[in-house]
Length: 217
Figure 1 (cartoon, one colour):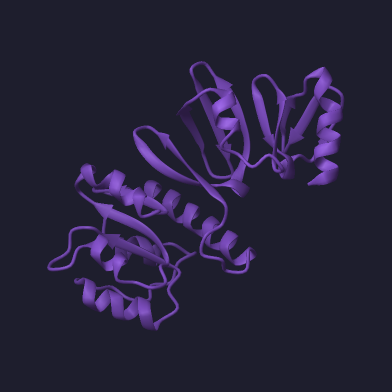
Figure 2: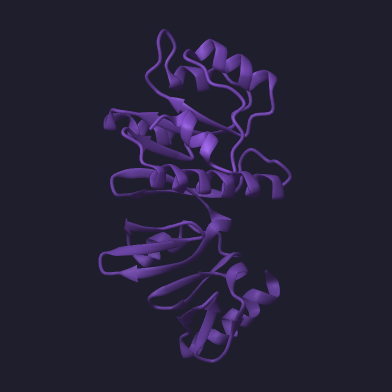
């Protein structure tokens, strides 16, 4: 299924242009208000990476390729997502959902190009995770599970090491197995902190720390 058809069939997208080479694509991106680009890495003369290097202002980018070896480099370019051919409608929709969330977040923050983020390595991929999208972190054997607004990611790390990567004014360790984003907590009692329909266990000696953290957030 072609990207053009997938774009036209998606009610959240409006096709601005379709181009077979990087020069035409660059002119469109530079002269029109483009929020999202589906970019094939393998193009004649100038490849997708070269195209991005030549842009002063970069839109959200979802890379497309038939070669898996480009994945790591794609995420070095802070790609929103990476689609490997052949592309299914379900996988395409998932990537679009992620892009829309990031575009909305950028606009909420005044259009700043870079919102606070960290990079994690999950399933052999380097992923850019926006701090404000993380809900909580959970111990998972030799790994930690990072739960975000869009997805869950397993990262080979200790809780302590991962905690050190997070801003201390936004995250708090409420249990030996849980770190939570203070901004995501909707209510709590002496036993649980609630994020949506999820109840995060609260250690007996952590309630007072949580109260102080919420007051200072």
